[in-house]
Image (cartoon, rainbow, N blue to C red; front, top):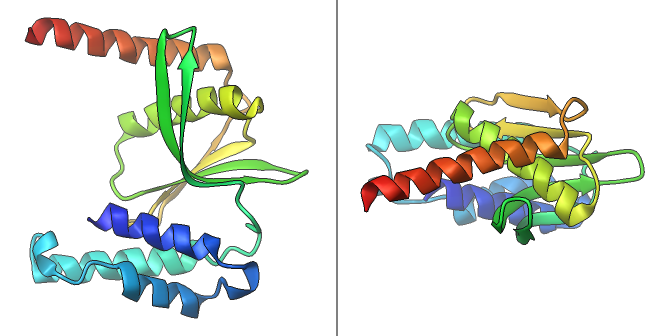
Length: 180
């Protein structure tokens, strides 16, 4: 519920014209989309603490005037991969591109190093397939802690991404074999 609300807030915020992307309008979106029932949380205290942390970090990270018009905003992408022999699907949170840069931003609530690693390779692969380009870097923004993880993509290549994703595919295939 928190993740969905956060996605709606970010989506609607970046859908506003640049001049209207203010902290006040962000607070209006938060009051509109944020869960009101504390039953969605462990307790009323957990709701207040989580709300305070995420609101604080949204107010810190979103009013970035350098982001003018994202070319992709919470858009699912699906491509057939000949190399992996499967459909690869992923939702891009925010893609910003100009003549100077190409940045992917992913807003996260829970930080898991294995999931971040998978996201990284999935994003590398999909950027190659969908945009026929390479992002300058990928930013993971952890909305509970305020931590920003900036990953440079200069040392990576598509073959590394394919190799990593094929390992995951093989692992998943083996799990299914053992459960049948």
